[in-house]
Image 1 (cartoon, rainbow, N blue to C red):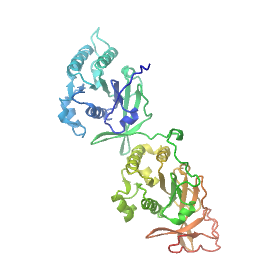
Image 2: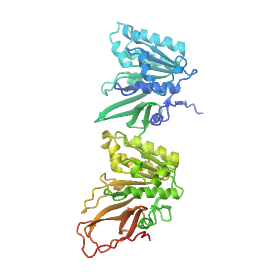
Image 3: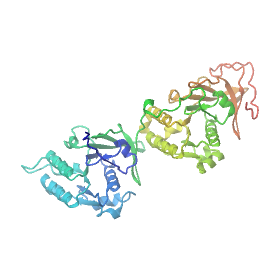
Amino acid sequence: MNHKVTIARLPTGVPGFDAILGGGLPEYSFNLIVGAPGSGKTTLAHQIMFALATPKRPALFFSVLGEPPLKMLRYQQQFSFFDLDRVHESVHFISLSEEVATGTYAQILERISREVETFAPALVFVDSIRLFMLETRQQPEGSISQQQFFQQLGILLSSWESTTFLICNYASETNPPPIFTLADGLILLAQSVHRNSMVRKIQILKMRGQPTLPGMHTFRITCDGIVVFPAIEVRDDSDLTPRPQRGERGGKRLSMGAPRLDDMLGGGLPAGYSLLVSGPSGSGKTILATAFLVEGVRRGEAGVIVAFEQTPSQSLTRTIDDLVRAGRIGLINTRTLDLSMDEIIQHLIGLIRRMNATRVVIDSLSGFELAVAPAFREDFRESLFRMVAALSNLGVTVLMTSELEDRYTDLRFSPYGSAFLTDAIIVQRYIEIQSRLERVMAVVKVRASDHSNELRKYVITDDGIVIGDIVPDYVGILSGSPSPARAPDAVQAGGHQ
């Protein structure tokens, strides 16, 4: 006979927060929300409270601040989640400042007990116990200790079947107060300033009875309250729903929108692959990427483009712009310079799922790194790996562009050491022929698939990229020691095979 207790999980109403909690807050749990001043503790508490409180499940918010609750509410009302009509109906604010200033632990406990008996709350919040501990250090002889107070408070609220949140302005990791060991849940909020950007992170240090998402997760405070961006987990393929093997012979291949390029790739890009297109400025990386998306729409496949460097009017053709407005291609266009990798990835994954997109373009990795806040750039390579893995798990085909300085004498694919992350690589570069710069293209790799090793010249026309014939008798283009045998043939207009 199974006597296992089932613990209900309460939805917090904070976007992304339930995911890192492991599905929500355990009902009747005793939780601490800790962090430095200004890190968002009170905002998080209010957002959870207004998401959960109802007339049948009321909430009590005990304020221990020296300032009146009315002043605090004046600012909290600016958030969209704050519902003034529910105050005094399902949400009740009570000030404990007088008891904390003049009373003992026993008197404070008696006041809380009296209010709990009156309202029978399902949710109880106390803000902030740090001030409250400082104010009540001088206790008369024979009074209950601080630890006894918290133990009795926990017993009291548990007996009333209340889910409790104590807010603490506590940022030090050394010598934590005894209440840390008594808490069922411990939620840490942190913030730091890097140059001109504010970086906010949240971590679940402890949550009894359920697995949580480990590590630090970024969040923002917006006009709607707190939004959490859970870090992307890299899961083993054995944990995923089985998918067709990528790159297997006979598997689906996607057209790039440039027929000769499809031939160079061995019949197109295998579905589900990640492709890196690298080359110097002006070599046509964005044009190739947009052709890839347009070809997908032509074949009934929705796509998404993430543009970091340019505005849509600059980076997208009129055709792409029309497809974005028609909802056939999703666009994430950002010039914000203090984003986190997790924030960008969550927006991207959300758009892919909403549109059921199968093709994704990231243009470019250089702009991507610039958009990321300085605090996250140290982990850019690791985060890039997480992003590619997450998109691979979704089964989409990804094209990323990477800008390189053309040194003429060496061959590189990416300044981020990201070539190993991708399944296929196309390199674009310039060569000098008869005192003119010409563009050439080659397929460097296509994992688990045959592909051409030809170096082909190409031009950019009003219709996009037109790939010409093989560059003949020009040995050493990549090594810096060209053979002067003869110049390559000119690309024929419309020279598709």
